[in-house]
Image 1 (cartoon, rainbow, N blue to C red):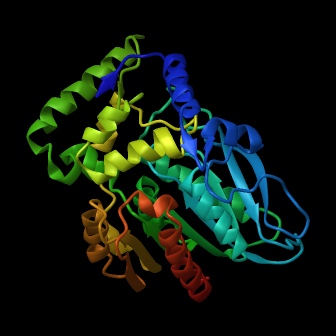
Image 2 (image 1 turned 90 degrees about the horizontal axis):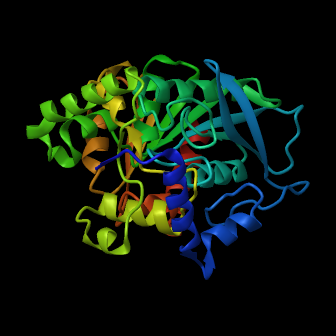
Length: 356
């Protein structure tokens, strides 16, 4: 789906969707009003208290763009001590206030200093055109988090791990293929953005590749001529449209992003011209370059699991590599459902404790 709606119109649609959403008897909008950090995940920090896990909103520049991030510090944090750290990369369409924040907070509860940042051009970070979603930029976002957190007070830069969720998982794999600062590499529900934008989800659009490349080329030409930015993706969606969505990933994804965990900074949109880069990119190429310990986590019922399987098989030089399957979990359920989040976190903590 593509749209020429202005960003202001899109934001209004998202905010109206937020206001109509219910979480545990409250609207998400009300939950955001109560949470000074606008975090929308269960158990989110509402205030910093001495001796507990704390959250620190920060901003930094990455290639001239201001990046908005949250740093989480462990209970009893002492800047003079030395802590391992984990960079957490958010899903496509996601932001730091959703599942990336949940996993960052829970890892901080286990003793890690963590960072979750909004990708450049997305969320609360800067960059124009908005919702640009180019792989090189998203990989650079992962490295930028490493740059920032490595010099954060108390961080032992020699014990740095990465956790990439969904699209952030694919971009984290690509970053780790060359960046040896990441001593341990983990993904959750990895989504290979390039493969899906090129071939379609579950390879369902192989016969339209050339047509979509033409659309992306035309969109780039229109941008270059000073015309409107053309967007792909979904700006808003009705309950009936959600119910009729056949794949678990997209049906549950719409529910997560536009209903149960909605946030006005989060959207399924991306610039159509981004496809020029996305469709020629693949997270699973050069997986043999990863020689760090590798943990890949996916739900047994996830309709995206084939992407994790493909990348994992190609990681022929990874040390102590493991594929951990969450029995019964779909892709989106790994973002929020307590039983699966707890299982994933227990495995992640074990993995980082062993390898950092």
